[in-house]
Image (tube, rainbow, N blue to C red; front, side, top):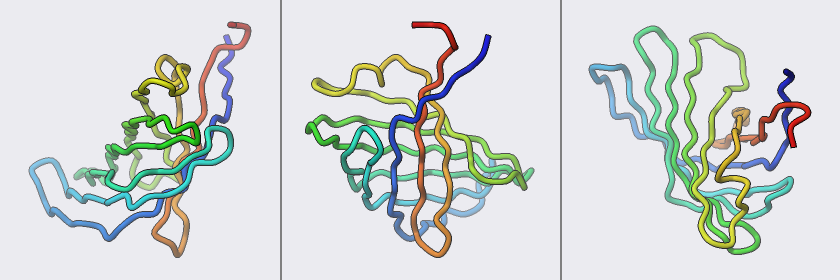
Length: 142
């Protein structure tokens, strides 16, 4: 079997100042507010303000990401997103993420049942990240 990937859309997110929670028993916790952004490349729309990434730098240097945010598509439908990752210490970019979607009425039904991978890259010199979202499938399946 061969896996396939189809690019669905890209999120360009504007980030706010980092809130440093500090050392916890599981590592160093930070909260990165999501101020808004744009969604392009297929499912166009906006990234709504109010989400955040609660990340944890583990004692071994790896980083655990857990982000929650909403997209408002051009159709008016709102999609809730939970995007997670574990990034190995010293591993090169991009960070591979696993986005999951909760879609209300009028939203794209295929987001409810697919398997998705995100490619997260930092925008150097800016408080921005890009997340390219791809649907993963198996070649030959309909």
